[in-house]
Length: 436
Image (cartoon, rainbow, N blue to C red):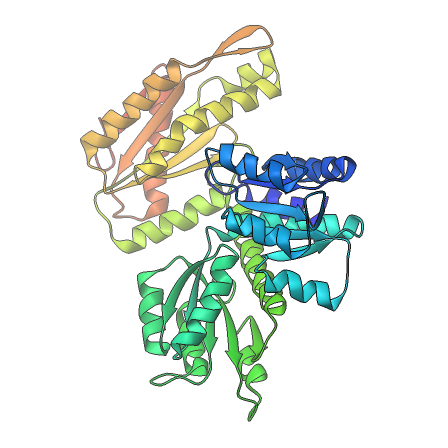
Protein backbone atom coordinates (compact mmCIF):
# COMPACT_ATOMS: atom_id res chain seq x y z
CA UNK A 1 0.00 0.00 0.00
CA UNK A 2 1.41 3.41 -0.96
CA UNK A 3 1.87 6.15 1.61
CA UNK A 4 -1.01 8.21 0.23
CA UNK A 5 -3.36 5.24 0.22
CA UNK A 6 -2.32 4.19 3.72
CA UNK A 7 -3.01 7.67 5.09
CA UNK A 8 -6.33 7.88 3.27
CA UNK A 9 -7.41 4.57 4.79
CA UNK A 10 -6.70 5.93 8.27
CA UNK A 11 -8.18 9.38 7.79
CA UNK A 12 -11.09 8.62 5.49
CA UNK A 13 -12.21 11.09 2.86
CA UNK A 14 -12.84 14.75 3.69
CA UNK A 15 -16.52 15.74 3.84
CA UNK A 16 -18.36 16.81 0.70
CA UNK A 17 -18.09 15.70 -2.92
CA UNK A 18 -14.69 14.55 -4.19
CA UNK A 19 -12.52 17.23 -5.82
CA UNK A 20 -12.50 17.50 -9.62
CA UNK A 21 -9.08 17.37 -11.27
CA UNK A 22 -8.33 18.69 -14.76
CA UNK A 23 -5.65 16.46 -16.29
CA UNK A 24 -3.90 18.13 -19.20
CA UNK A 25 -1.46 15.71 -20.87
CA UNK A 26 -0.86 15.09 -24.59
CA UNK A 27 0.31 11.49 -24.11
CA UNK A 28 -2.76 9.24 -23.98
CA UNK A 29 -0.80 6.43 -22.33
CA UNK A 30 0.63 8.62 -19.55
CA UNK A 31 -2.70 10.38 -19.05
CA UNK A 32 -4.44 7.03 -18.60
CA UNK A 33 -1.85 5.87 -16.07
CA UNK A 34 -2.07 9.08 -14.03
CA UNK A 35 -5.85 9.17 -14.15
CA UNK A 36 -6.09 5.56 -13.00
CA UNK A 37 -3.88 6.16 -9.98
CA UNK A 38 -5.76 9.30 -8.92
CA UNK A 39 -9.18 7.69 -9.25
CA UNK A 40 -8.15 4.43 -7.59
CA UNK A 41 -6.23 5.84 -4.64
CA UNK A 42 -8.07 9.10 -3.98
CA UNK A 43 -11.51 8.65 -5.51
CA UNK A 44 -11.27 12.07 -7.19
CA UNK A 45 -13.10 12.84 -10.43
CA UNK A 46 -10.62 13.35 -13.29
CA UNK A 47 -11.48 15.21 -16.51
CA UNK A 48 -8.94 14.75 -19.31
CA UNK A 49 -7.86 17.28 -21.92
CA UNK A 50 -5.05 16.94 -24.45
CA UNK A 51 -4.65 20.58 -25.52
CA UNK A 52 -5.08 24.03 -23.97
CA UNK A 53 -8.14 24.60 -26.16
CA UNK A 54 -9.74 21.41 -24.81
CA UNK A 55 -8.86 22.48 -21.27
CA UNK A 56 -10.49 25.89 -21.77
CA UNK A 57 -13.59 24.18 -23.15
CA UNK A 58 -13.74 21.80 -20.17
CA UNK A 59 -13.50 24.71 -17.73
CA UNK A 60 -16.22 26.61 -19.58
CA UNK A 61 -18.59 23.65 -19.58
CA UNK A 62 -17.97 22.66 -15.96
CA UNK A 63 -20.77 23.51 -13.53
CA UNK A 64 -18.39 23.26 -10.56
CA UNK A 65 -14.85 24.67 -10.43
CA UNK A 66 -11.86 22.40 -10.82
CA UNK A 67 -9.90 21.90 -7.62
CA UNK A 68 -6.58 21.87 -9.47
CA UNK A 69 -5.14 21.27 -12.94
CA UNK A 70 -2.33 18.80 -13.43
CA UNK A 71 -0.75 20.17 -16.58
CA UNK A 72 2.04 18.99 -18.85
CA UNK A 73 4.28 21.82 -20.04
CA UNK A 74 4.68 20.30 -23.51
CA UNK A 75 1.36 20.52 -25.36
CA UNK A 76 0.50 20.83 -29.07
CA UNK A 77 -0.79 24.38 -28.52
CA UNK A 78 1.34 25.57 -25.63
CA UNK A 79 4.66 25.06 -23.88
CA UNK A 80 6.38 25.95 -20.65
CA UNK A 81 5.18 28.83 -18.53
CA UNK A 82 2.48 29.85 -21.03
CA UNK A 83 0.54 26.70 -20.07
CA UNK A 84 0.55 27.75 -16.41
CA UNK A 85 -0.41 31.32 -17.28
CA UNK A 86 -3.28 30.17 -19.50
CA UNK A 87 -4.73 28.00 -16.73
CA UNK A 88 -4.24 30.70 -14.09
CA UNK A 89 -6.22 33.01 -16.37
CA UNK A 90 -9.05 30.46 -16.17
CA UNK A 91 -8.83 30.58 -12.34
CA UNK A 92 -7.60 27.00 -12.11
CA UNK A 93 -4.62 26.38 -9.76
CA UNK A 94 -1.83 24.46 -11.48
CA UNK A 95 0.51 21.62 -10.63
CA UNK A 96 3.07 21.46 -13.43
CA UNK A 97 3.97 18.05 -14.87
CA UNK A 98 7.34 18.24 -16.59
CA UNK A 99 10.11 16.05 -17.90
CA UNK A 100 12.74 18.80 -17.56
CA UNK A 101 14.71 18.76 -14.32
CA UNK A 102 16.90 21.85 -13.99
CA UNK A 103 17.06 24.97 -11.83
CA UNK A 104 15.97 27.32 -14.62
CA UNK A 105 12.78 25.35 -15.25
CA UNK A 106 12.04 25.05 -11.55
CA UNK A 107 12.35 28.80 -11.02
CA UNK A 108 10.21 29.53 -14.07
CA UNK A 109 7.45 27.18 -12.91
CA UNK A 110 7.31 28.52 -9.36
CA UNK A 111 7.72 32.09 -10.61
CA UNK A 112 4.57 31.59 -12.69
CA UNK A 113 2.73 30.81 -9.43
CA UNK A 114 2.23 27.09 -9.95
CA UNK A 115 1.31 25.31 -6.73
CA UNK A 116 4.09 22.78 -7.26
CA UNK A 117 5.74 20.73 -9.97
CA UNK A 118 6.11 16.99 -10.46
CA UNK A 119 8.75 15.37 -12.62
CA UNK A 120 7.86 12.76 -15.22
CA UNK A 121 10.47 10.40 -13.84
CA UNK A 122 8.82 7.16 -12.83
CA UNK A 123 6.91 5.55 -10.00
CA UNK A 124 8.30 7.75 -7.22
CA UNK A 125 7.09 10.91 -8.97
CA UNK A 126 3.65 9.44 -9.56
CA UNK A 127 3.42 8.44 -5.90
CA UNK A 128 4.38 11.99 -4.88
CA UNK A 129 1.73 13.41 -7.22
CA UNK A 130 -1.04 11.30 -5.69
CA UNK A 131 0.14 12.22 -2.19
CA UNK A 132 0.22 15.94 -3.12
CA UNK A 133 -3.34 15.93 -4.44
CA UNK A 134 -4.57 14.17 -1.30
CA UNK A 135 -2.62 16.57 0.88
CA UNK A 136 -4.09 19.65 -0.83
CA UNK A 137 -7.59 18.22 -0.49
CA UNK A 138 -7.22 17.59 3.25
CA UNK A 139 -5.67 21.03 3.77
CA UNK A 140 -9.06 22.62 3.08
CA UNK A 141 -10.20 21.48 6.52
CA UNK A 142 -7.07 22.50 8.47
CA UNK A 143 -6.80 25.84 10.22
CA UNK A 144 -3.39 27.48 10.74
CA UNK A 145 -2.56 30.42 13.01
CA UNK A 146 0.17 32.75 11.69
CA UNK A 147 1.81 34.90 14.38
CA UNK A 148 4.13 37.77 13.41
CA UNK A 149 4.27 41.43 14.39
CA UNK A 150 5.16 42.44 10.81
CA UNK A 151 2.01 42.65 8.63
CA UNK A 152 3.98 41.99 5.44
CA UNK A 153 5.37 38.73 6.87
CA UNK A 154 1.92 37.62 7.97
CA UNK A 155 0.74 38.34 4.45
CA UNK A 156 3.60 36.39 2.84
CA UNK A 157 3.22 33.32 5.06
CA UNK A 158 -0.56 33.51 4.98
CA UNK A 159 -0.58 33.62 1.18
CA UNK A 160 1.74 30.61 0.99
CA UNK A 161 -0.63 28.65 3.21
CA UNK A 162 -3.77 29.79 1.39
CA UNK A 163 -2.22 28.79 -1.93
CA UNK A 164 -1.99 25.26 -0.55
CA UNK A 165 -5.63 25.41 0.56
CA UNK A 166 -5.16 25.91 4.32
CA UNK A 167 -7.53 28.11 6.32
CA UNK A 168 -5.52 30.96 7.86
CA UNK A 169 -6.01 32.97 11.06
CA UNK A 170 -3.61 35.82 11.96
CA UNK A 171 -2.22 37.39 15.14
CA UNK A 172 0.22 40.28 15.58
CA UNK A 173 1.84 39.07 18.81
CA UNK A 174 1.77 36.30 21.39
CA UNK A 175 -1.10 37.72 23.43
CA UNK A 176 -3.28 38.02 20.33
CA UNK A 177 -2.27 34.48 19.39
CA UNK A 178 -3.57 33.10 22.71
CA UNK A 179 -6.84 34.94 22.13
CA UNK A 180 -7.14 33.46 18.64
CA UNK A 181 -6.46 29.96 19.97
CA UNK A 182 -9.26 30.41 22.48
CA UNK A 183 -11.59 31.69 19.75
CA UNK A 184 -10.61 28.95 17.27
CA UNK A 185 -10.14 25.67 19.19
CA UNK A 186 -9.93 23.78 15.88
CA UNK A 187 -6.56 25.32 14.96
CA UNK A 188 -4.08 22.50 14.25
CA UNK A 189 -0.87 24.43 13.53
CA UNK A 190 0.73 27.64 14.80
CA UNK A 191 3.48 29.26 12.71
CA UNK A 192 5.15 31.88 14.89
CA UNK A 193 7.97 34.38 14.61
CA UNK A 194 10.40 34.81 17.51
CA UNK A 195 10.94 38.57 17.93
CA UNK A 196 7.59 40.19 18.78
CA UNK A 197 6.39 42.81 21.29
CA UNK A 198 4.40 41.88 24.41
CA UNK A 199 5.28 38.18 24.15
CA UNK A 200 7.96 36.59 21.97
CA UNK A 201 7.67 33.27 20.15
CA UNK A 202 9.47 31.27 22.84
CA UNK A 203 7.18 32.52 25.61
CA UNK A 204 4.16 31.96 23.37
CA UNK A 205 5.25 28.37 22.78
CA UNK A 206 5.63 27.78 26.52
CA UNK A 207 2.13 29.17 27.13
CA UNK A 208 0.68 27.03 24.34
CA UNK A 209 2.23 23.86 25.75
CA UNK A 210 0.62 24.52 29.13
CA UNK A 211 -2.74 23.71 27.51
CA UNK A 212 -2.08 21.97 24.21
CA UNK A 213 0.11 18.85 23.85
CA UNK A 214 2.26 18.59 20.73
CA UNK A 215 0.27 15.63 19.39
CA UNK A 216 -2.85 17.83 19.20
CA UNK A 217 -1.45 21.23 18.23
CA UNK A 218 1.74 21.65 16.20
CA UNK A 219 4.00 24.71 16.43
CA UNK A 220 6.63 25.79 13.90
CA UNK A 221 9.05 28.52 14.95
CA UNK A 222 10.39 30.94 12.33
CA UNK A 223 13.10 33.57 12.80
CA UNK A 224 15.93 35.36 11.07
CA UNK A 225 17.75 35.96 14.38
CA UNK A 226 21.07 34.10 14.26
CA UNK A 227 22.41 35.49 17.55
CA UNK A 228 21.30 32.53 19.65
CA UNK A 229 20.40 28.88 19.30
CA UNK A 230 16.73 29.50 18.60
CA UNK A 231 16.26 26.21 16.80
CA UNK A 232 17.12 24.19 19.91
CA UNK A 233 15.24 26.62 22.18
CA UNK A 234 12.07 26.11 20.16
CA UNK A 235 12.46 22.35 19.81
CA UNK A 236 13.25 21.76 23.50
CA UNK A 237 10.11 23.62 24.54
CA UNK A 238 7.92 21.45 22.32
CA UNK A 239 7.98 22.97 18.84
CA UNK A 240 7.32 20.54 16.03
CA UNK A 241 9.88 22.20 13.75
CA UNK A 242 11.95 25.34 13.23
CA UNK A 243 12.55 27.17 9.94
CA UNK A 244 15.25 29.87 9.71
CA UNK A 245 14.65 32.95 7.55
CA UNK A 246 15.06 33.33 4.66
CA UNK A 247 13.55 30.06 3.45
CA UNK A 248 12.58 28.59 0.11
CA UNK A 249 8.86 28.18 -0.44
CA UNK A 250 9.31 24.52 -1.33
CA UNK A 251 11.07 23.83 1.96
CA UNK A 252 8.33 25.66 3.85
CA UNK A 253 5.61 23.56 2.21
CA UNK A 254 7.47 20.30 2.86
CA UNK A 255 8.01 21.07 6.53
CA UNK A 256 4.44 22.25 7.07
CA UNK A 257 3.07 19.15 5.33
CA UNK A 258 5.19 16.80 7.45
CA UNK A 259 4.11 18.47 10.68
CA UNK A 260 0.42 18.49 9.72
CA UNK A 261 0.56 14.89 8.59
CA UNK A 262 2.00 13.83 11.95
CA UNK A 263 -0.92 15.53 13.72
CA UNK A 264 -3.32 13.73 11.39
CA UNK A 265 -1.73 10.33 11.94
CA UNK A 266 -1.90 10.70 15.72
CA UNK A 267 -5.55 11.82 15.56
CA UNK A 268 -6.44 8.95 13.21
CA UNK A 269 -4.74 6.37 15.42
CA UNK A 270 -6.53 7.72 18.50
CA UNK A 271 -9.83 7.64 16.65
CA UNK A 272 -9.23 4.06 15.53
CA UNK A 273 -8.38 3.07 19.11
CA UNK A 274 -11.65 4.60 20.33
CA UNK A 275 -13.92 3.03 17.70
CA UNK A 276 -15.53 -0.36 17.37
CA UNK A 277 -14.14 -1.86 14.17
CA UNK A 278 -17.49 -3.20 12.91
CA UNK A 279 -20.04 -0.51 13.74
CA UNK A 280 -17.76 2.56 13.98
CA UNK A 281 -19.46 3.49 17.24
CA UNK A 282 -17.37 4.23 20.32
CA UNK A 283 -15.94 1.09 21.89
CA UNK A 284 -16.21 0.02 25.54
CA UNK A 285 -13.00 1.74 26.65
CA UNK A 286 -13.94 5.05 25.03
CA UNK A 287 -17.48 4.86 26.43
CA UNK A 288 -16.20 4.68 29.99
CA UNK A 289 -13.67 7.45 29.36
CA UNK A 290 -16.32 9.77 27.88
CA UNK A 291 -18.84 8.83 30.56
CA UNK A 292 -16.34 9.74 33.29
CA UNK A 293 -15.76 13.13 31.63
CA UNK A 294 -19.50 13.77 31.42
CA UNK A 295 -20.10 12.85 35.05
CA UNK A 296 -17.18 15.02 36.16
CA UNK A 297 -18.80 18.00 34.40
CA UNK A 298 -21.74 17.78 36.79
CA UNK A 299 -24.45 17.80 34.11
CA UNK A 300 -27.88 16.83 35.45
CA UNK A 301 -30.24 15.10 35.06
CA UNK A 302 -28.51 12.01 33.73
CA UNK A 303 -29.58 8.57 32.60
CA UNK A 304 -27.92 5.43 31.30
CA UNK A 305 -29.34 2.68 29.12
CA UNK A 306 -28.10 -0.78 28.24
CA UNK A 307 -29.46 -2.32 25.04
CA UNK A 308 -29.28 -5.92 23.92
CA UNK A 309 -30.30 -7.46 20.59
CA UNK A 310 -32.82 -10.20 21.31
CA UNK A 311 -31.99 -13.79 20.28
CA UNK A 312 -28.83 -12.62 18.52
CA UNK A 313 -27.16 -16.02 18.83
CA UNK A 314 -30.11 -17.54 16.96
CA UNK A 315 -29.60 -15.02 14.13
CA UNK A 316 -25.97 -16.11 13.83
CA UNK A 317 -26.92 -19.79 13.97
CA UNK A 318 -29.75 -19.55 11.44
CA UNK A 319 -28.35 -17.06 8.94
CA UNK A 320 -24.60 -17.06 9.57
CA UNK A 321 -22.18 -14.63 11.18
CA UNK A 322 -22.17 -12.34 8.14
CA UNK A 323 -25.90 -11.80 8.67
CA UNK A 324 -25.20 -11.12 12.34
CA UNK A 325 -22.67 -8.46 11.34
CA UNK A 326 -25.25 -6.82 9.07
CA UNK A 327 -27.76 -6.72 11.93
CA UNK A 328 -25.18 -5.10 14.23
CA UNK A 329 -24.41 -2.44 11.61
CA UNK A 330 -28.09 -1.71 10.99
CA UNK A 331 -28.73 -1.33 14.71
CA UNK A 332 -25.68 0.93 15.05
CA UNK A 333 -27.10 3.15 12.29
CA UNK A 334 -30.31 3.46 14.31
CA UNK A 335 -28.29 4.49 17.37
CA UNK A 336 -26.07 6.98 15.55
CA UNK A 337 -28.61 9.88 15.51
CA UNK A 338 -28.55 9.78 19.31
CA UNK A 339 -24.95 11.04 19.18
CA UNK A 340 -26.19 14.17 17.40
CA UNK A 341 -28.79 14.53 20.16
CA UNK A 342 -26.04 14.66 22.81
CA UNK A 343 -25.86 11.03 23.92
CA UNK A 344 -22.70 9.00 24.43
CA UNK A 345 -23.24 5.88 22.30
CA UNK A 346 -21.10 2.73 22.25
CA UNK A 347 -20.97 -0.92 21.37
CA UNK A 348 -19.88 -2.50 24.64
CA UNK A 349 -19.27 -5.95 23.21
CA UNK A 350 -21.09 -8.63 21.24
CA UNK A 351 -24.73 -7.63 20.87
CA UNK A 352 -24.70 -5.24 23.87
CA UNK A 353 -24.75 -1.46 23.46
CA UNK A 354 -24.64 1.39 25.96
CA UNK A 355 -26.01 4.92 26.15
CA UNK A 356 -25.28 7.79 28.52
CA UNK A 357 -27.86 10.57 28.25
CA UNK A 358 -26.65 13.76 29.99
CA UNK A 359 -29.22 16.51 30.44
CA UNK A 360 -32.13 14.31 29.37
CA UNK A 361 -35.34 14.45 31.43
CA UNK A 362 -37.04 11.16 32.33
CA UNK A 363 -39.94 11.54 29.86
CA UNK A 364 -37.62 12.36 27.00
CA UNK A 365 -35.49 9.29 27.73
CA UNK A 366 -38.51 7.00 27.90
CA UNK A 367 -40.14 8.36 24.73
CA UNK A 368 -36.96 8.44 22.65
CA UNK A 369 -35.87 4.91 23.56
CA UNK A 370 -39.38 3.57 23.06
CA UNK A 371 -39.20 5.14 19.59
CA UNK A 372 -35.85 3.40 19.05
CA UNK A 373 -37.33 0.06 20.11
CA UNK A 374 -40.18 0.47 17.61
CA UNK A 375 -37.80 1.51 14.80
CA UNK A 376 -35.70 -1.58 15.47
CA UNK A 377 -38.69 -3.92 15.35
CA UNK A 378 -39.67 -2.52 11.94
CA UNK A 379 -36.32 -3.35 10.34
CA UNK A 380 -36.24 -6.09 7.70
CA UNK A 381 -33.15 -7.18 5.78
CA UNK A 382 -33.08 -9.77 3.00
CA UNK A 383 -29.98 -11.87 3.65
CA UNK A 384 -29.25 -15.02 1.69
CA UNK A 385 -32.74 -14.84 0.22
CA UNK A 386 -34.36 -14.82 3.66
CA UNK A 387 -36.08 -11.98 5.51
CA UNK A 388 -34.24 -11.22 8.75
CA UNK A 389 -35.99 -9.29 11.52
CA UNK A 390 -34.69 -8.41 14.96
CA UNK A 391 -35.71 -6.61 18.14
CA UNK A 392 -34.00 -5.01 21.12
CA UNK A 393 -34.55 -4.98 24.87
CA UNK A 394 -33.60 -1.82 26.77
CA UNK A 395 -32.94 -1.15 30.45
CA UNK A 396 -32.78 2.40 31.79
CA UNK A 397 -31.55 3.83 35.10
CA UNK A 398 -31.41 7.41 36.39
CA UNK A 399 -29.08 9.39 38.65
CA UNK A 400 -25.46 8.87 39.68
CA UNK A 401 -25.48 9.33 43.44
CA UNK A 402 -23.38 6.18 43.82
CA UNK A 403 -21.25 6.67 40.69
CA UNK A 404 -21.09 5.33 37.14
CA UNK A 405 -20.68 1.67 38.03
CA UNK A 406 -23.81 1.76 40.16
CA UNK A 407 -25.76 3.56 37.43
CA UNK A 408 -24.82 0.90 34.86
CA UNK A 409 -25.51 -1.90 37.35
CA UNK A 410 -29.03 -0.59 37.82
CA UNK A 411 -29.50 -0.21 34.05
CA UNK A 412 -28.40 -3.83 33.69
CA UNK A 413 -31.03 -4.87 36.25
CA UNK A 414 -33.68 -3.15 34.15
CA UNK A 415 -32.35 -4.82 31.00
CA UNK A 416 -32.68 -8.20 32.70
CA UNK A 417 -36.28 -7.32 33.65
CA UNK A 418 -37.07 -6.33 30.03
CA UNK A 419 -35.84 -9.71 28.84
CA UNK A 420 -37.56 -11.67 31.58
CA UNK A 421 -40.92 -10.08 30.76
CA UNK A 422 -40.86 -11.06 27.09
CA UNK A 423 -38.08 -9.11 25.32
CA UNK A 424 -38.65 -6.29 22.79
CA UNK A 425 -39.39 -4.06 25.77
CA UNK A 426 -38.16 -0.92 27.52
CA UNK A 427 -37.83 -1.25 31.31
CA UNK A 428 -36.93 1.72 33.50
CA UNK A 429 -36.68 2.76 37.12
CA UNK A 430 -39.60 4.65 38.61
CA UNK A 431 -37.06 6.29 40.90
CA UNK A 432 -33.46 5.51 41.70
CA UNK A 433 -33.13 1.84 42.47
CA UNK A 434 -36.87 1.06 42.05
CA UNK A 435 -38.69 -0.51 39.11
CA UNK A 436 -41.29 1.30 37.03
